Image (cartoon, rainbow, N blue to C red; front, side, top):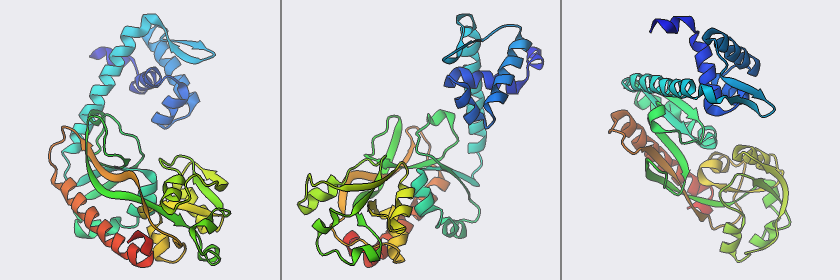
Length: 305
């Protein structure tokens, strides 16, 4: 392996990332450096290897045909290295890595982590806030929390909470409301990435197909909630998203029922994952914490009872 001394490892990482991801920008995002830095690393590596690996085109960096063998071996090599690092980290029972959808992490989980730490002070948490399901063999994630229908290829899922939604708004906006139809002319705050539409609730109150007035649209549910708190309109929110604000009076849910969307919050683990004591402890804790929070929510907002 002495020939590896002739090429910088960071350069090989840059080459592998560009080849795998298909662009300098994507490689830069993954490596946490600038596009210019990735480009320079690729150029320097080509010089060290004494051969060209990519064609520079208007479409970006395109691997040349003659470099196919080199690049495929680099892909395999870094995949093995990633697996080795993940395996080494998995042997540490004092660290629990959890991948959580960003909105659940920000609006519910992060406020309660101290309770878990008090109960299990020997377990450190690493929260990875994203909603992707990466190949389990290429990551060190111990447990995932996702919203969906419970079916993800190559993963096992366990239902935590069925998702239910109801309109929420500020107390001031709710003062003039007498019946569900009164919501129709009010401006709506729309989550453009939501897996459901307003009709899932309107149908339940006999207003199926009714036209709604959209004021703002956001690609992040957390921003929608902030807009609702600011009095910009009515949002169709679910339990874990709006629980804190409903319990503390920042928002109210003027009308029920809270309607099931067909989706739910799930624990998701790799299909072949071995039983882990630290994972089981976290799951038991989160279920108990969530049950207690739903009891408090039902008292503050009876529509979610």
